[in-house]
View 1 (cartoon, rainbow, N blue to C red):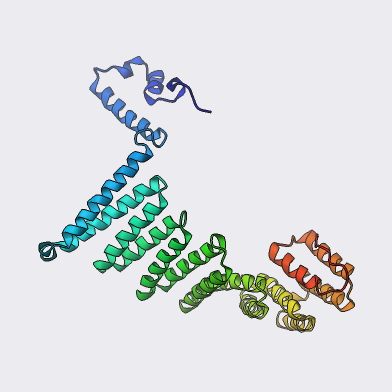
View 2 (view 1 turned 120 degrees about the vertical axis):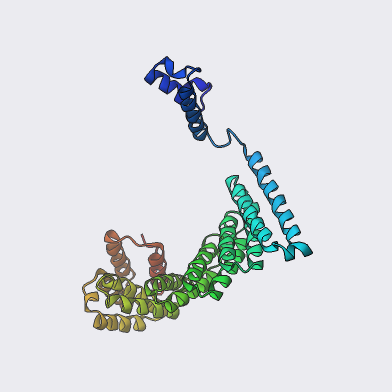
Length: 347
């Protein structure tokens, strides 16, 4: 609900008049005038965005900055500028493009912001400022994420190219994850998301960041199983599970990875799953007493007996304590469909 009059809005001068008396507003007192000027500045800062400069004004200012930057670039390309300070004009142009980009961000003109950051990045490359160029390509990517996902990916790939050339593989891995997330959420291309998670994992491994690498690999395993690439998922879950069981801090999570690996085995073949469960119990004795292992054994028995009711009851019992997520539900439904009889939805 909007106020119909300014009388209801808080004003610092009125508040101080109430607090300190009417003498505070005395225009003849220079000290008071100074205080009032300061408070007026505070008040302007607290006013809603756009009250002093609307969006069109900010966009106009951004366009002026772009025009200024273009002039700097052109003047830097002249013969005399090449001899006397051409690079400094390029650097000034870079700063102007970046300022324009930030101004476009303020008015949510994401395409214009991304383009301006790209122009700054290209100029930084001209003067061999690789780090600044990569930073601006990332800025461009972040802007384009909100309007043009594919262009965001293109910008992030340019940044990755620079970072890998500089040997900054951890940062490159982080941006591969960003690209994977765009493919997941915006472009819905799971195969490409997997490829970028795998590349990120490789870079993290090379930098001995095994925990970060495993997080990426688990994303790969999740999607591989959904795409019915079960053997690939099994290898990752077993690898991460084996690594986790040797860590005092992570060994509790090992049972979850072996559980998921066994379910992937189950989707391939029941005998494979049975042998896998035995192997995991030998490798990690704590797995035997886990609810996950007990569920697997009940599912194996139900499958062997082709007893759909027992299968469903076992899943319901597990779900009553540990809620099934979407991935587990999908895997369990796939296994259920291999049992003879009426196919019912898991509840």
